[in-house]
Structure formats: structure tokens, C-alpha cells
Amino acid sequence: MKFVKVMAAAATLAAGVLMGEAAAADVVVVRSSGPSAATYRAGSSLPDNASVTLRPGDLMVVIASNGTRTLRGPGTFTLASGGGGRMAAPRRGRFSALRTAGIVPRSPTLWHVDSTQSGKFCVTNASNVMLWRPEAEQSVTLTVTGAGGASHNVQWAAGESTLAWPPQVPIAPGAEYQLNWIGAPEPTRLSFAALTQEPTDLTSVAQALVSQNCQNQLDLLIETAPAADEGE
Image (cartoon, rainbow, N blue to C red; front, side):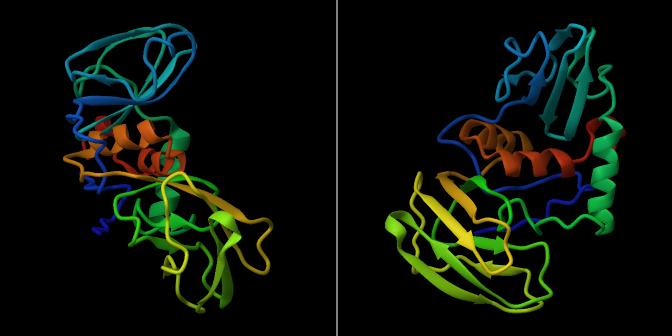
């Protein structure tokens, strides 16, 4: 399984996901809220020369081949780079900068499973999944519980931030799993979606994550992808 760094300043992101035989979209809507959200739903694909008209209170985040753009209504915007969309919100920029500086820990790739975040996770190879933890100072005994209550204990050594998913608890799409260790406030509850093809570009990754509702990965992708309007 390929693991590719997802850096905030990176100009590209290769990722091992592409849903079925869907063709790569020019621009993918990854977040949409406000009066026009029903028209521009998350997961929708649009040609990069399309124009969108937003009403007061609308917010739309799109991902293109060269990064993200955040559009705020009211106004009419051309989705092509340099087409008048507003820059990403300052909060997102600050958060990405903190991640890059190492102040806010983040997983080394989009495909490492954050052991502290519950949710659905997209994988391309269910037999080769890596776990990640933001704090690795101490050794812990991790208990992985699968469908039917079967569990397996694995030692997560001090200083190691990543750990291979134990093969004794095989991953099955749609099944729920729990991760627990002493000191954890509550178990991490995970499910997995198996993706069958590798992506061709950033928009294919976004579309796959939206389609499968892999929200944690989608949030990380949006936070760390470059802002297209910044020209970086």
C-alpha cells in the first residue's frame, strides 16, 4: 500500500482511492452550507470552467487539481483558478500552519488511521492498514475488538507513533471495531470502506472520501491541501 505525505504546502497529493470506475472530476464540492447547499451538494462534480451563483449565507469549499478554494456568497464565481473566488478562511490557514509547524500533531499520511478518532475510514488494502497516535511517549497495550466480540491485544511501544493493524482481527467492510487502552477516555469506534482503485488526482481522492462518508480523512485533506488561490 502506498503512503504519500499529505503536507500543507504540497502542490499535489497522490492517494490510493478512486471509487469504482468513476472518472476524475475537474472540481469537487467537498463542503456546502447555506441556502444553496441543496443545489451544490457535497460530492458534486463540476467542470473547472463552470460558474456558480451563491446567495447570502452560502459557503462552498471545492477541491481542484491544484488545491482548495473557499467561496462565500453572495456572488457569482468561476471555478477555474483565478476566477474570483475568495481565499480560504483565515482559521483554516492558521490551523494548517500549526500542523506544518508540528504544534498540532497529525497523522503522517491520509491513510494512517488516527487511533483517537472514531468514524468511518477509507482503505484500499484492508490487509495492510496502519494505525497512528498523536502521543507516543508511553508504551500501551492496545486492545482491538472486532465483530462478534473477538479481540486481540498488541503492545504499542514507547516512541512508536505508528502500528500495523493486527491480522488476528481482520477488517471487513461495514463491520465495527473498537480500539481501547488504559488511559483512553473512551473506546475509539471504527468502520471501514474498501476502495477498489487508486486515484488519478486530488479530485478523485476527494470524491471517493465524500462518497463513502470518510469524514475524518476528508477534513484532513481539506486542512492540509494547498489553497489554489495562493498559487503555491
